[in-house]
Length: 358
Image (cartoon, rainbow, N blue to C red):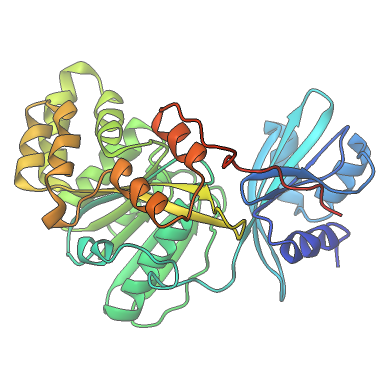
């Protein structure tokens, strides 16, 4: 057992989502969204290097020394899988580790809106899951892929950096590829994927123009494509994709997007009012004929109004979803209004500080 495994065990016992270790500070946990220092000594650069390098392969060590950054996944038997990022900072080495549960939860266990299962019940098109870092995008995607795996005879091909949730073949055949291990890049993997007879593609992140263009082509040519972006709303997601391309190509991309996009699931996480973890809020857009026309005609600013009037199609804006969470007494008013950009005197309901971990 590696020395850092003890920190991982403590992280899991505390129900933390992330472990941070950095030169010049004690380890920190992220508990329900808050950064909490552990009752532990300040780590030196040598301490951090010893903890991290013990779990790296020789190839990973070489990659880190060359690039000063490294993404990889690490598994502790009986405990879980961890997504790891190692980097350099002013005082030396640092690393962040995020827990990836071994058991993939179903959409029902995650309380995902039922309309999401209707959204993915199709044979082709592009479905985007968006949100800031740590908003639960990977967990939502894993649940949706797991649902398809349990219900459809299909070939699912994923391209991830790194592989996070590990899927087993149930009804579907699933091949998972990791950038830097099984393929050179997202773009290379997508070029190959079109020759690999997939029914469904999962792209861990749409990072650049080439990857976005290949994902759109795959969606247009009869594949169901899932992908993520770091955007905060459905409308901003459309803008982000189009703005990646040169101005001379943007009308063509609008047309492709209007034809191939099936929907956008934007999400964020809030601390629960009862202190028992976090709860997700969603904005859901389905690409109806009306929204497809808005995309094609470059009237992206009108999309929120279409979502607002599209409740019969299962669409919902963040504002409405968050309002419902507030009415149910699930989240702090101050957190909700801060996310929505509103001012509020919440009468002391703001998220209390989490006490220092023991």
